[in-house]
Image 1: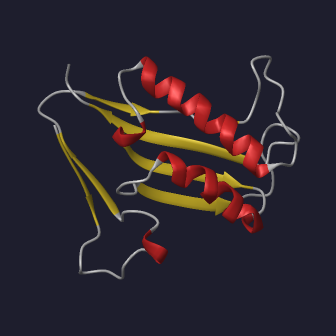
Image 2: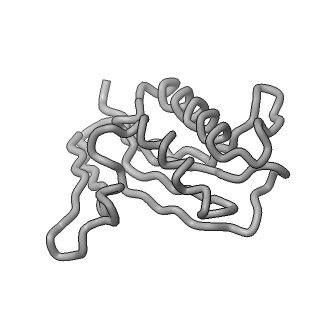
Length: 135
């Protein structure tokens, strides 16, 4: 499987080198994972630290890491991240947590502000797409 994270010269560079414009997958084998959006909930399904983007982001990436690991993947296998935030003013707090999980090439990314999320107190939801290498 060949994965290429690319920023072609035919378009403007990503803002602040925070993401790749294109994630290309050429799989002779392997699998593609499409994770549902994750919110920062504890093991009982209760929102952790209502209104706190950093605490919720920490929990979200813990959950995503567990889902990826259960399928033989890790953060280095993530091709795309889609983030829904109730306040883009919280972007720096989220970015500080997210960047620790992606120290190398950044995956393709979409971040949008939404009016609200499905659980009261949740301020961020993150979904990812990942490529699992063949065993």
